[in-house]
Length: 219
Image (cartoon, rainbow, N blue to C red; front, side, top):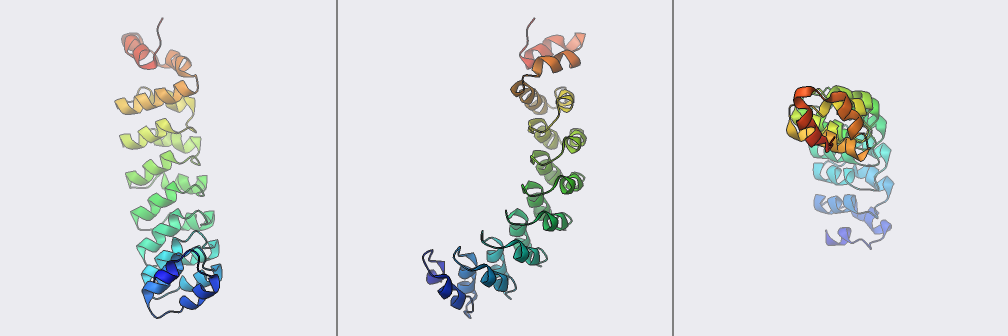
């Protein structure tokens, strides 16, 4: 096992060890960065789920091999595929419909996930999935606008902190019932030097003092 884990081992020796009868050795080969892509593809079909999981976590694993592992029955293998930087947008789109909540959360987190896939995940029944969508920089302003009305304050808070959230959406969140959401929205506006502009749009006579304080504005 230790030999297969050695970062200085040759790819040729790893190819031999990939056929070892001990699954622990094959697991180490599957996780070694020196293992050839074609060997990893073979190990992606290994009878042992831990070996397949190790392949899914290897940075050298190619998109086509990850596509195979995306259909794996092992949840942990699919977790790794969902968060892998080499997983194609097309495969991520398929995994967005996975039955496992953690897989969908990882898809919502992946920077390769397309806006249209994130739009689907924005309607997920699991609030943690929607919260992660609200944090993803690839999520469209239109989807963020919808999530700004989410029943979960955690989701709204994430929308309030997203750099892609439009000023008009932040204006709505600046008057949210949740204090943390309001503050996050106002801080986002301040970063863009828009706090005073939005303040003038949302102020009302009975709340003027409170709004001035929150927006850091004085007249």
